[in-house]
Each structure stands twice: as structure tokens, then as C-alpha cells.
Length: 522
Image (cartoon, rainbow, N blue to C red):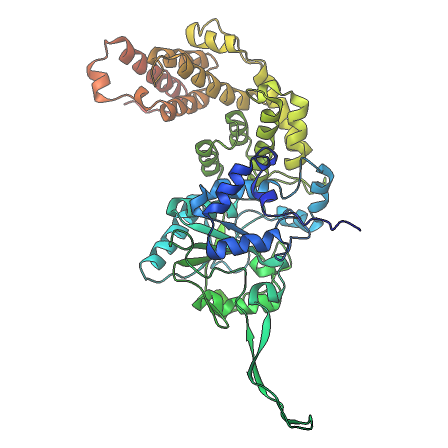
């Protein structure tokens, strides 16, 4: 008897390889799911809810439910999508998953450039705040007009929605409408018998009977407000690429939360996203449809992304520093080369997650022990070979700075090694500055490093005679070590060694700016 091929279940996608072996984790997660959420899980595991057939999310269920009671939504989303391209098992499949259509998408600027300029560009913090306000308005019974997000591929729209759900403490339901058939979203029509057919004694039909057709409620939509009674966010991804019948049905759903006899529970809000008209073949939004949404265009800023990546500890600091100082690798494609893989905020995070898995698999302490060729290959599979080669050249110099070199920069700055100049010199400077500040914190006995050590770090970088870099390093030190700032108390007690060091560091920046003519006479 031929063995039936197993359809990948939901647990394959919410857990990575290490966690899959931990049945306790699976049981714990399932135990928290109740009612509709548990039924949805079973439908996904049984293959009733279909898998996405192509594209970057190939192999994932078209529906992802992330329950707030199972921990941070962002972490659940990361685990869920980390396996979408099966990068560790089948790198070739990743390349084939990206269609040539995505090449066209990447050539479009992040800013909204359509003729219709009524769509406003919005940054990541503002979008997150708007989603949170939308939910709070619905929660108190106010107006909750859904939000539609335009944006280039790979900029992290799903992660921002997940981050908003985390801040609100609510669940998130992610529906990928692009590949959904009408019955997946609308429910399957059934005939309900009202009056049975009447048959006489001779078997002849006297009356054909009567019946009505009714659509069963769609299995993909919530029937309650979740395990914590707080509802959440329904994220309709790739909305303007949906089947026309699916798209038409969302008119009533978006405005009134209804589809036929189905009514959305009162604690759920709707956020949607899709490509801009210049990027792909998408459905036109007529005035009636557009009026049902607040429409914005997401433009991620490196500073916002870097802050998020550092706070969430998603990407190594050295890599974040490299991206910050090389803006073209944040989201970029060279059309002349026609590469299928190119850097996006999402692909940087994906690569970092795979890198962390590799570090853990090898039982290593950090990426520094992994080997540059392996690191290059991991990143090349996600961000493309060009950006990965630049990153490798940068990390190659970073690796030449030993722990002893860092200690010398702190304790004997005038004798410490000078960083070699080259293509990545500026990036390396910023990367080493992060490393040496971290080293100073490690060497300290308390929570804050000795101000005299921080002043020595400033003295070391002052040797390069670049006031812009020195000013940036000073600001980064203040961000990491706020007590290093100059206050009135510091000025009043400037004879104390620690305060003297703080003033010395600030004066280095001021003198450099003055020598360069950046300060006035005062």
C-alpha cells in the first residue's frame, strides 16, 4: 500500500529544527489554544487550509494565527516565516521562489511616486502608532476605519503589524489573500432543506419541496475574541492581488465586518497591505473601495530599523553598523545585473536569524568563530552576492581587531593600533567603536563603565581627526551610557576625576568642530 504523503503541519512552521524535538513546547502551545483558534490549527495541520504554492512564502499555510497568550507575536511571526523558503534544507528553492516580477518591484523607489499624490508616506513608528490607535478606538466603541499599507517588498510590513499587536497585548490573524479561492474566504455554500419533497402512494412527486442556500461561515475568520477576550488584528496581506470575488467580498467585510451571515467579533480590527500599481499587476481600487480605508505608503528609515533591530537583538551590532553606514545595501537592486536576491530590511533579518541558527548548531559563542566564507554564503542566499561581498570585506577587517586591541584602546589609547584605511574604513570605524564601548562595559565592575575609560575611547578615535565620526561616537556612547552626559552637577564638581573625564570627552568634540569652523565664536 502506497504511503500517503504527509502535508506539512502548522507545527513545522512555528518551530525551528531545534524546537521541533521539544514536544513539551508543542503541547504547551496547543494547550493555550481554545475554541476557534484550536479548530483553525487542526485545519492547517490536516491540510484543509492550503499552502502557498509559490513566491517568497512558498510552503506556508495561507493563514497564520498568532495567539497573544503564546508569547510575543513578533517572535511567533519570526518562527513562522523563518521556514517559508526552506533556506537551510533547499537553498536552490529560495532562488526559484523569487519571480522576475519582484525585480520590477525593487526598481520602484520606497517613496510613493504614483500620479495620485493623495497617499501619504509614513515611517515605521508612525505606522505602528496608527495601528495601535485604530485598535484602541475600536476597543472603546469608537470609529475604527481600517488601514491599507502600500509598500515595496521586504520592508517589514508584517513585522510592524506584529509589533503593534505585541504593544497592545492582542492576537494577530494573517491571511494571504493572493492565493485564496473564493470559498477559502467566503465559506462554502450549502443547501438547507426547509420542506421535504412530498411523494404520493404511487411514488409520484406531489411537491418538490423547498430549500435555501446559505454560506457556512468562513473557517479562516474568528468566531470569538480569542483566549484573552481582547480580539486582535486581522492582517489581509496581498489584498489587491486577490481573486476578484474575494476582493469584492471584502467591501462589506472591511466596512461592516460582515460576509453573508458571518459577523466579525467586536474586538477585531482590520489592517491590509499590498503592492503599488507601478510594482505589479494589481486590482484597481475604485473610489468606493478606497474610501473604506486610510491608505498610507510605508517608507522604512534606516535609523528606525536599526533601533528596532538593536532593541529586539535580531541582528549582530556589527552588521547593523555596516548597514547604517552603507545606505545603498538597506534596500537595493542593481537592475543591470538582474539578480534574483537583493537586500531588503526583511532579508537582512532573515539572514541574521539563519546565522544565529548556524552559531547555535555549531555550539559557538558568536559569528566571529564561524568563518567568513560560511557567513558570506548565509547572507548571499538572502541579500544577494554583491551586498554579501561588501559585508564580508567589512567583517574581515573587524575580525583583525582582537580583544587585546580593544583593551589597549581603552587603557593606552595613544599606543593602540590604527585601523587600516580602505573601502570600508568609515564602516569599520563605527563598528569598532561599538565593540570597544561594549568591551569597556564588560571590564567595568558595575552597570556603567568607568567614565575615564570612555574618555580614553574618545581619545583613541580623536587620533583620526574626523570630527563627524568623533561626534557620532560620542552620541553613541551617550545612548549606551547616559551617565556620561555633562550635567550641571558635573560642571559644579569638575575637579572629580570621573567628571573631569566627562568634560574632557565633550571638549574633544567641541574642539574638533571649532577647528573645522562648525562652531561660532560663542
